[in-house]
Image (cartoon, rainbow, N blue to C red; front, side, top):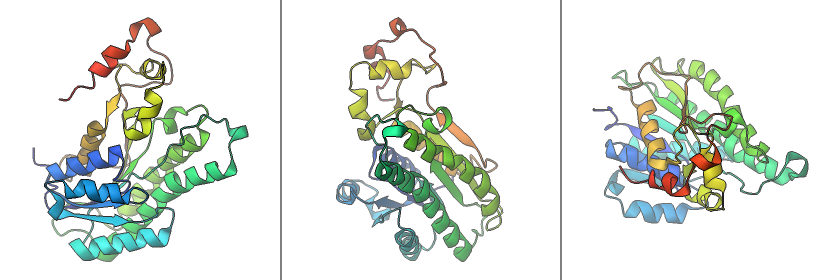
Length: 282
């Protein structure tokens, strides 16, 4: 299936992380031109891109997503280099690993998580909309696409991670508001969100390796398996495609194996070896 992304410019924030890199690979496979954002891990992102067969159609840019001026400058550089930006994935985020109830959580941690995950997404969206206002819609009727990376923590909550769940829950309001605003700039433009559950990335691996965590996590999932970053990448391609998702806007897709806010399986029904076996490549 031709997703009609081969001539599109796709900007992905947080592209140095596991999900961000998987998104980059998924869009590269569709022939898109890429703008990949990094910050603290910029050097590793540049080294990774240099090894890819699609490096010639990729621009790597640095920005602190909590600084709106830097985010605006990143979009200006992307548009100067490629002529425009068609798709933006607001993916940059942090998940503080320490389990901390709100009454013990430091103001520094709370503010930092919200600044990156919620305000960073807002600055990214604002910069994209400003750029879209400047460049106008495409002449072929292929609407622009803005996609947020949320989390099941925003839907179900996550004990001892109130900062993270609050930052992701706030994205619901952005999706449902910006779907209406973006259409004023481009009548075919869309705004959606992907909501991953537990996904195997470097950020999550340390916690998943703790005894009992993996088995406990999948007890809330119908499929009893941990997600893979490539599955989030494929969902991003779908939402961003002017062919596959032309009439889809304001939607949230949960990619979490049928996760619910309750336990579905007894402990005896979940074996670590079985769960890990389901992570085998396609």
